[in-house]
Image: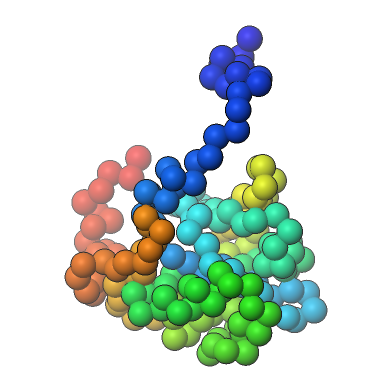
Length: 187
């Protein structure tokens, strides 16, 4: 018998883990991609995680069947737009499913971009190339090698938890990018 068999009974009732995840605040992102037909897609996502620093890899989890996931699968690249504290309207727009969302916001995509950059909503953007993906339950885990990170402005990040939006309590100037990295033991 494997350890997995010991931990999860074969006939256990389904567990609703939404209350658990609602009480776990996280940053808010909009993950974007350009489909191979050139159409931009994007969705609000709080499932973002650093996987590796060398090589730089992160993961996002996206709902199976989402047009954004289909665009990422077709283009094999994506961008992660980390939203700043004044971008709640963007988070709500990209969570709404509105088909005209990119017509309602200012965005750009350069030749090396992994997906559209939300210029007014993001404080930092990561451009990624897909290195692996797999379906787990009703979501796909997409791993992306970070090709570029663009910090647009120092900002307080937009946070989501307890089914509401909040922000970091103080302005962050960006100096943490060099000084704190030395203070942490990342191993």
